[in-house]
Length: 334
Figure 1 (tube, rainbow, N blue to C red):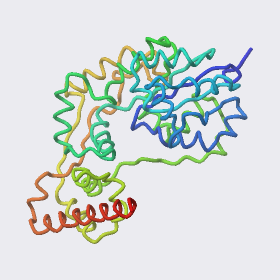
Figure 2: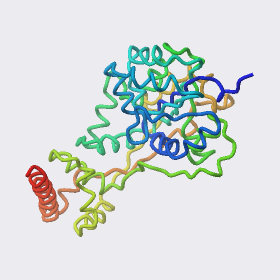
Figure 3: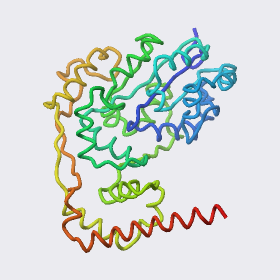
């Protein structure tokens, strides 16, 4: 009888964002020999920055056949990982199914407690050049007809189940994984791949949450049309950044997120139909998520009215960063 790793099959890790995906992908890239010794392959085709993000772009554009020609000739069980897979439409997922040509398919999905997501996902958006304030983001989140992508776990699972079947889904509660294993990569290797000896592996947390003063600097630079995260880095040791960090400590307020909020309550109820496919769900628990209430520290918007002299000096600092960027671009163009 064939073991899972002896079959010619496919494991699709679809994320989503903010569930340790980058750390897992880096561990997969760095441990290809270990994977191979257990019959697994993490293909180089379609890789961009550890994950198969280029492959997802090719699936979206319907230009992926050459990549899968190579993947389908691979012996063993193939692992694909990209949090952007969760964004695919049903039509695009069907393309993936048609060209994969493999015997068995498992879809791996980690579900993060919804009340821990708003601030974390807003930070991720700011890291990716958005400039809206957190309060504005919350208004859009709670009033939108369709939940923002990482909150719409039920629909993501529906899409993949409609193509591959409900039994292909293997979902895990992210917060319980972190409590039990300390790392998604360690859980993935041990529980999904069934690799028992993890001693050769080292696990590194990546893409961690940023302090209040850093994310606000990045957001302000984004608002000026820059890639805030990239342009902030060379200036992070500046004296005024230190001043701003101290000021932020005095200008925070708390926002509470709870399942008493109908928005979060409805998301948990919708996900209830997947309990049979959430492999680490404890059926004796009353609720899907154990944590029911959380408080997040956020920056007060009126921080810039506290000390107008500092606000002016900080804007001058941002202008200096912008000027430095423009000079760098001009030098490169010549």
